Length: 159
Ligand SMILES: O=P(O)(O)OC[C@H]1O[C@H](OP(=O)(O)OP(=O)(O)O)[C@H](O)[C@@H]1O
Ligand SMILES: O=c1[nH]c(=O)c2nc[nH]c2[nH]1
Ligand SMILES: [Mg+2]
Image 1 (tube, protein in one colour):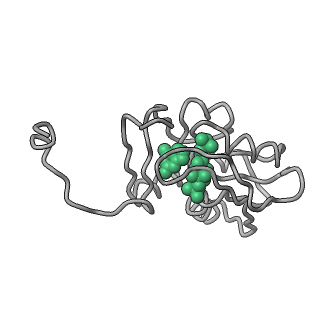
Image 2 (image 1 turned 60 degrees about the horizontal axis):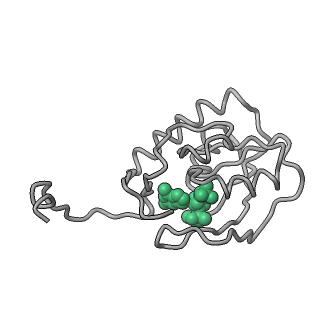
């Protein structure tokens, strides 16, 4: 992505609440044999959803695409899951362009794909999600941020 215009920082509490909201939607779609977490972003949401849906069987597909500067490089698949995904639930934190979701869906075409957040380009690839944010927004997850001093708005405006 070129530099995102807006930021959307998410706290641990907010993430927990949204992951539980996703679990409420998913309980209607199950039961699932197990959960496939898309690393690394899907790991924490998958843990919360596994607890809520009482799922004990967890696997991972291990993917890498974005560097630290919000740029997406080539998607690398570091670990796959065998089979067609029938009866399985795939969890990722978000869909942005949808490129990661496309790779995972092609790998496990019969699985149910769910994320907490969705941006418009990726939204058609997700079966269930909770919150949509605009394409020019960068979501900051709680594991990527820390509490720190913020300039008063008036000072920020003065530059
Ligand atoms: O829809 P896309 O444009 O493909 O972007 C979404 C993917 O990007 C992020 O993962 P990333 O590859 O950055 O790795 P991470 O999960 O380890 O943070 C995020 O967790 C999604 O998996
Ligand atoms: O932390 C993240 N926030 C995002 O908005 C995003 N889009 C792709 N990959 C992402 N990672
Ligand atoms: Mg990811």
